[in-house]
Length: 120
Image 1 (cartoon, rainbow, N blue to C red):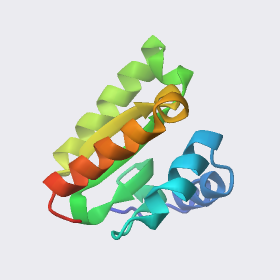
Image 2: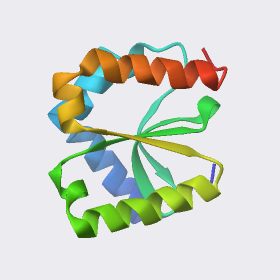
Image 3: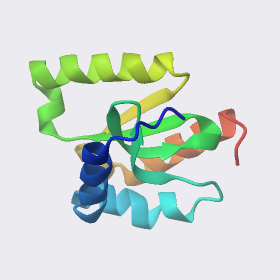
């Protein structure tokens, strides 16, 4: 994958792994880390740090807080998603509210996407 040897990004990614949001922690500890495929947390891809990444499925998983729904955040997310799509990656986004109120639905959707990518 297009990782960039950017010490700032690498250091930021390490910090973000240590300081995950409660929704990221829940998805990671209660679901993603138990999958039979490798999922990385706070992965540097190109000029971005993505929340979670499954290389075998070419799947980026993003959890969005409220700032992503403001106009500036939404524009930034679209540009970022487009750049990641150009690398052949699929980006899926779930709101923090999705994780908090429909955790089983989020997990089921991710399992479906992984099955479609033929990585289970």
